[in-house]
Figure (cartoon, rainbow, N blue to C red):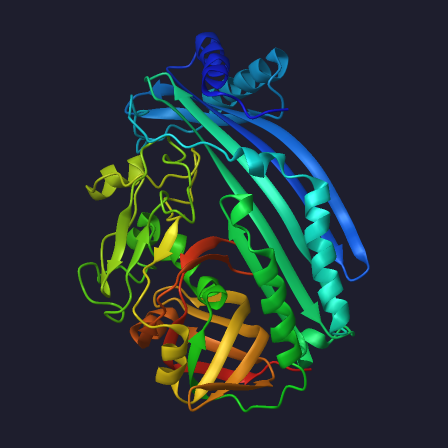
Length: 458
């Protein structure tokens, strides 16, 4: 199976529109090609070569000042499945409650095109096996157990509606991750464990050797971790640790729904300096390390949208309904509709600073180098108070020099306060994902007085 070309996708969608009895109809077609291998220290443990088409039909019937609306989907593009989805959507919409806040479907727009990477799409299992072999050989040489993931994915999406909107785009993603640990189920707790990942838009950008070197050397350094009492400490967070925190700003912080409901840190603070002047954040689907679709779940255009500039917060991101409700521009951040979740930032980019890694360590002086944060959850959304634990290597820093490992620590920390206490931002940002999901572009950051609350050891 190949990704749908634009003309083919539009032809299928137009047939659905022609068959619809609804006042408004929207068709979304997603196509995914996903090829991956999971592996452990004895070799591959799971693999898949998956191809999937998904078609969703959203229909609306006018009812007074609002719309009765429903959505149905099909996992195949054959005529019977597609028309079956349309029929289900029409049946369900007729019994739905009318929504007077619904906004008419948007009309024609111009969006920047995006295309998949052919080498990423064609990357073979043989090539992935070579990545895995190199990792396991290196792990064995250091008496470490290794495991991880080699994956390539290409996707396309098309949205066509009865108001004349027609958008299409495609993206690519390649990943190699490796976790190294001393033998034993408690390695991640007592030390001797570390992970590294390279996530890129194109497979030839994945630096397999750097992932292996980073994970293995960090795991070796993490052996024999010392006890450390929890207390507020200055920390240098590596990009993956930064991602675990910033991910929570996407919907809970920058979204219009939480802003309106008063649970966002932006509520009452838009236009004010909220973070350190060294912190700037944007939502940028066109960033070279993200290359996302240039339209949202309603087919509205997405562009580089500033969220925080030199510590000063802008207003929330919106979709069509929330833009009208709050009398704001539509920033193109809709989920697939209908949805009660509200708009969400999805291509976060934290701007690079001016400090090299060596300069950040020197500026830190005495503190901790934290590679990852895990099991992060929200305690209080208004100031984004988060709790979680370190993982994958925590190291003392003395006089700017990285020393021995310490045991994992739990933290409870307001992200608003943490980003207000940033005292240095690295000069190299990279695409990273948090261990609980979500990806963004972030540099390393130095935070003063990070709130560690207890040890995280058995």
